[in-house]
Length: 410
Image (cartoon, rainbow, N blue to C red; front, side, top):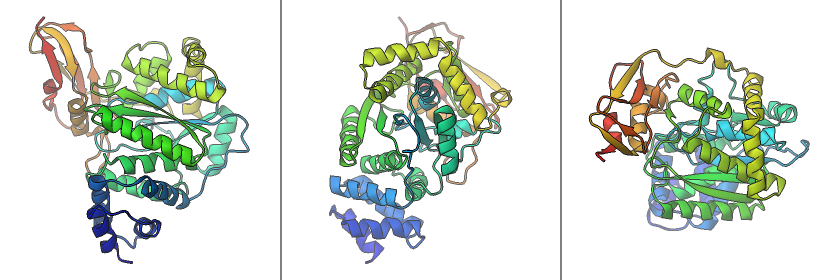
């Protein structure tokens, strides 16, 4: 078998066999297939798609490239969640402590930034001392001790996805629905969860730009779950405007903590409550209404905040030592009116330019920079009011962020 033949076959819109997929993807894992060759295959898949059977085979190949986490020794229902990524999406940092504080087991393995979206692991690494890596034994111990963990993929868990994930980030193949589905579900299934909630972001700041694509991904994720006898529930949420008021790693961690402390009520809060309610509903087999009551109580009673602080401390982090850049630039409104739009993609581009994300695999991330949105959609502003604050380290530059705002004179 020849890798060029496999690439040509997919380029010509033909269906790849299980053997051909194994040859190409396991060959890449074993360094027998080069980056540029796998990039070509990924691009052919992105352009021409995959059949369900191809996706099922790829998920299985991903899973079998490493170990599967056996959580049977831990009592209780295991519920996991995933987001397809969005601008300002720090829902995992909020939702997992909420659900764990209500007695469910949450084994959450997260990824780094993909494209212009920030990864949960990048956010957690902005906390000094925080350990994002964990062995299988450490994962089991933390789940037994505090009922939750958020960590990066272990070296032994779906290692094939880990290297393909990094290549997709820099090869223009991030938005492929089959590749997204295979990546998400292989990790979720290998992580040992009984129930899986997936938040599919939709809009200009998401991988899925329109509802048609979001629904297509939703249906494929559910079909993969059915293939493995896993209950999968999906939400489709808006990502035309940033989630919350902070975009940037340390800024987003701080916002997550403030939400759990009852100080934040915005679109981030609403979505976190929805996600957590669905997870609790699945895990406890109760109605969404009853689950929502428990979720709100976990926030209002500070149980979820206590769980968040316990989790950060358990993994060695110090929130008190977390740093946000001292260099600030306040961006003023050029006119008076009502804010009717804040373009998530444009805000993300600015945050990325500041250094909060990666353009290349080997880039370093500046955890202390980002954008704080002082004003929200629907708010009336006067000329000269501060629309947002840019935290920077490179140079004082607004990177054209005013282009993200739509202000109508009403």
